[in-house]
Image 1 (spheres, rainbow, N blue to C red):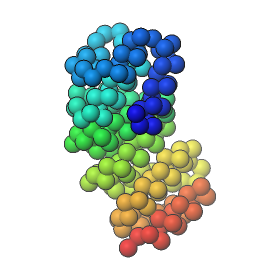
Image 2 (tube, rainbow, N blue to C red; image 1 turned 90 degrees about the horizontal axis):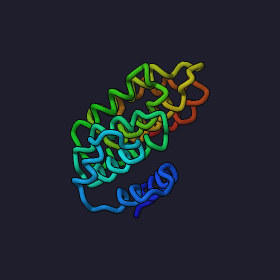
Image 3 (cartoon, rainbow, N blue to C red; image 1 turned 180 degrees about the vertical axis):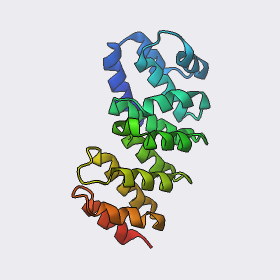
Image 4 (tube, rainbow, N blue to C red; image 1 turned 90 degrees about the vertical axis):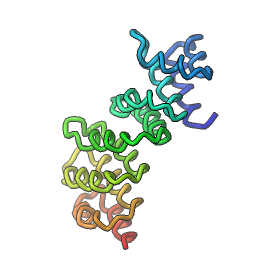
Length: 188
C-alpha cells in the first residue's frame, strides 16, 4: 500500500467510524462494486472518495467525474487524493478540467491542487493556465498568494520561456519574489 492510499485509508476509516463497509471498499478487488458506489444514492462522501480513488488509480475512467468534483472540494485532503488519482487515471479530459478549475475566479480559494495537477500533467494547457492564473493573482495584497506561488513553482518546473513576463511580474509580490527569481534563473 503506497503512502497516498494509506493516508486516504486512515482518514476514511475515521470518518466512517471504522465501519465494515469502509473496510470492504478499501480491500475489494471488484471494479464493478466500486463503480456502483459512484452512482448509488445516499452513499457517504468517504465511500465515493474511496471508490473514485481506487478506480482512478486503476485507470478506470468511470471515476473521472467524481474525482474532478473532489479536486474542487473545500477539504484539502480530498483534493490531494483526487489529484493523485487523476494523475494516474490518464484521462485526456483531466487537463481541461483542471484548467477550468484553476481559472474559475469564483473558486480561486480551491485552485491550489488543480494548479499543481496541471504542473504534474505537463499538458498543452498547463503553461497558459499557470501564466493566466499567476497574472490574475500576483498583486501584493492578493489573499490567494499560495495559489500564485504554486503557479510560480509550476512554471519553474515546466521551464517554459513563455512564463518569463509573468514571473518577472511576480517579483514585485513579497511572498513570490524568491520563487520567481529561482524560476527565472532556470529559464532558457
